Picture 1 (tube, rainbow, N blue to C red):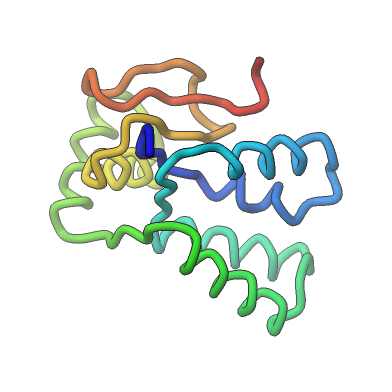
Picture 2: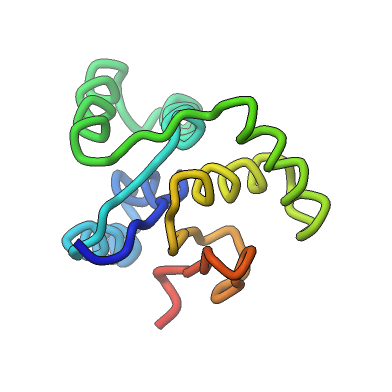
Amino acid sequence: MSDKVFIDSNLLIYSVSTEMSKRIAVESLFQKNYEFVISIQVVNEFSNVCFKKNLLSTTDLEKLVNGFFAFFKVSPIEASTILLAYSIKSRYGFSYYDALIVATALESKCTLLFSEDLQHNQLIENILQIKNPFIP
């Protein structure tokens, strides 16, 4: 395996979206030789959007999320993660929930964070690089 990478919830949402160009890009990303990591926060955000936008039935969502649990390493959010998120929020000016994603990625020892919501190519703590997979 090469890099350990964290996947933000917006990419999971595009994996079930009717926006085919982004769906294909996400599916292509998931074919790469990475160790993929998500957090419970990512699963909760994904589930919330699916329920709000009526993207999947509860049964289909449950099956899909079980597939996520098999495919991705799922990182917990601990007290240390929350405290690190406060520091990240203060230092980089992220929203709390974005800072929590970044903190979880850092604690999971990821070197890449794929997200559409954060600044492309930004380097966090000289360790974690943010990549928008929709930017060539």
